Length: 448
Ligand SMILES: [Zn+2]
Image 1 (cartoon, rainbow, N blue to C red):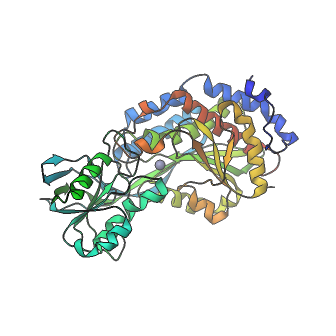
Image 2 (image 1 turned 60 degrees about the vertical axis):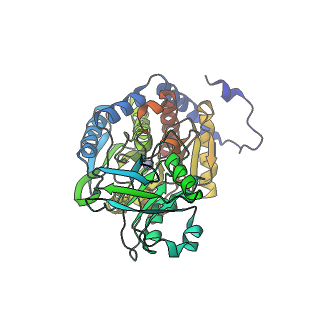
Image 3 (image 1 turned 180 degrees about the vertical axis):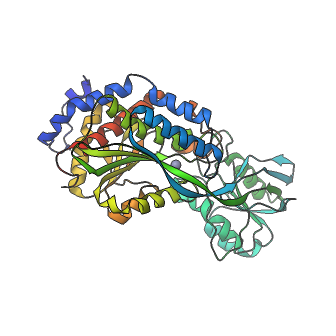
């Protein structure tokens, strides 16, 4: 019994449809089973301890994919398979960043994903510190031959990410020889945050790296004093030929309408630092766990529930595109797609994109999740892996929403399982299981 379900409904609540009553009991069973032990967290620990980080093209990613498929079979999931995807293979190699003047100082840095390397002897040059893109434009005449540091304080991911993704090419157009970017994340304990850059086709490709916020602040103070700053950057980064990899797929076939699908998943690839626990081993484990819980409790929904552990979200998005292309014929049967890629901290609910009618239904289903705190439905749902399919077929899209500080350890050496609370993982699994089960089982198709 969940005490919170006895509280009066909030005033803004929608009327609850009669058919939802039928789902109170299975929902409470799914929640109780999820919270009864630490199965999901232990699986996340196993994944990240046994295989470590899982960059596209790495053997550990493919080993993890094969392991996941075997484990899904042991859980009793159906149609478990690896769906082939050719992925890019960027290799970091050794790297370092050192301040040479005004005083020698080793910076905490990480080369940006897909960056080119430096010549074998490195790049050594004067540093120009800019605060933002407008600052860059206004100092265009001072850039040639220099290393540019973009030192824009982190506000939110959407607004801060362009310095990482586009900054290198924007500086290269004015003749910069390399770029440093203040890490895209809140100040932590001197952590560098990697992540992909995107070279523009009309700019020279120059090496680029993220440095910790503390190191960025240090260079800023030097620049503000008018000191001459010289940095030496050394990076072996390079691209090797594409490698065969796979999306991992498992199902619980629907008992009445098997050709209609609720798809849930996270991405199995990660950056090559830390252990890819929060981004996105956790999203993989909790969506997979949703199917395991249904299977264990003998809850077979009317429609098929499919879990997909996507590949190559971080530096290419090839898994999401390959899924769309391979499943084009059945996309019209996709009732809902959910991606968990915002961390598995305390869940607060879901982001949802779809029709108003579908949203009303999702809001009603979410009321079953008050007990785990996951009953809010926000305005925007989606994810980079489901996006190609969602766009092609207009599939209602959902993401999980959580209250933790996802960006503190995002793309860093600190992305390890010890940051993640087993109870939070169980709550995420419970929330996804209930949402996926009800939408897959309810009499009417979502939105009808
Ligand atoms: Zn991610």
